[in-house]
Length: 217
Image (cartoon, rainbow, N blue to C red):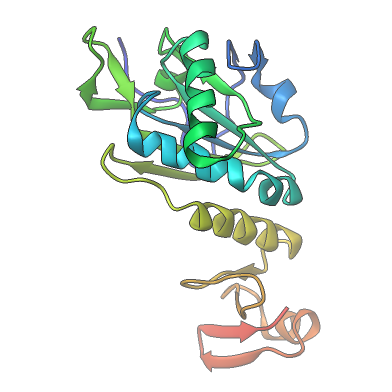
């Protein structure tokens, strides 16, 4: 099995069809004109994955407010997914409303570079790592993250990244977001923005150095 991914930062996310906990998913039809948080987890009925899926389910309305759909993936089958989702609800109290792909063939996870090189299922087949792809409405990959099996993801950081990407887009790429930025904080002006444009577009900006200019929005 080839494990060389064809998906990377700024590439166009390829379409696929794959069974899921909610029936057959065509990725382009599912994502439509929305942002998509596409993520993989190593396996159903595992402790860290249970906490992650439960936490994402609790934030479903937050993702909806950002026009962002959630789409999970593991290599388990449909029935295992459905039984596990019942268990997630029992343990976390959160109902999972987004689909989880059943990538038993590893075709999607291989294409997207989600396969973990060091971990395998009981049958000796590779399993996914904790990958994250944030994909915009034009199907362009805007952010890529990869976590090891032992480290659960931070859902607040996932929302923060979406906020950052959408805020930058709303200002035509003329801004950037600094370390630990959250909505409401000052942004950094693109260093390539000339002084006249800085004054016109961001009249309340202030200069820290010749290459760093901050502004409220």
